[in-house]
Amino acid sequence: MLRIDVITLFPEMIEGAVTHGVLGQALKKDHLAISAHTPREFANDRHRTVDDRPFGGGDGMIMLAETLEKTLHKVQHKNSKIIYMSPQGKTLTDDLARTFSNEEHLVLICGRYGGIDQRIINSYVDEEVSIGDYVLSGGELGALVLIDAVARFIPGVLGHDESAHKDSFSAGLLEHPNFTRPRVYLEQEVPDVLLSGNHKVIEEWKSKVSALVTLQKRPDLFLEYIHQENLKYQALKKKKKKTPLVELKSFFMSLSDKDKQVLGLQDLTEEDFNV
Ligand SMILES: C[S@@+](CC[C@H](N)C(=O)[O-])C[C@H]1O[C@@H](n2cnc3c(N)ncnc32)[C@H](O)[C@@H]1O
Image (cartoon, rainbow, N blue to C red):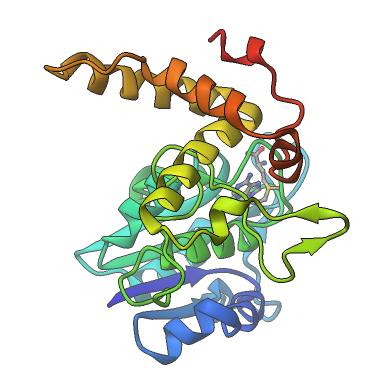
């Protein structure tokens, strides 16, 4: 079972948020254990001070090394991976979340104010992780994003119908659009193929639509995907007539305008395939 300890000045932000939905179920079923700890517990003065002014001046208070270190000593063991949530860190991705899900113990340090004393990062932190190129006022929201993304990869956390392996990014592609009843709504009709009952055809169709959605929304991801598909194609002994890109373009051209519209692909053009 993955255990996650979060070091934060606001434990209630973590404790309150993780009791809902998929995470709440994962905790109940013991797929995951999450605890929050505050450095204030180790502040001995009357005001329970956990921060101080930065040496050399500057904006914002800095979280004290000593109270953070004592909190780390409370939770750390030899297999702990210590992560500092930081805008300066490696950006959280699906792959990184999957890697973290294989750890035994994660410790997430949430900064506040101007951040934490660098010496804690130097001496204890294994990895700095950012949730994006913007600055938050505290690490708690980042920690919650990381916890949610990691939990989805723990076996048993998602039910049979949901699967982290079908979601966006899992195969380097974004997920295809999804529809539920009724078949026609807002004058838009669900593509016939999804009602055909032919699972093999449906799966192939979905994976091609995924590739088209990725081409439209994330050309950067699409380039990597098509590069990998080309390598597989080159390795084939008996080559198909069409390269992966040409095959995808033909599939796109074969879609009706009505289907392109309902799939949100109406703005994709033949020129977009000149990658
Ligand atoms: C106001 S920020 C401090 C930023 C710091 N002075 C800097 O420029 O790198 C306070 C805390 O929010 C958290 N934080 C801010 N932006 C974040 C991001 N993009 N991802 C993860 N954590 C973030 C960090 O824990 C940070 O210590």
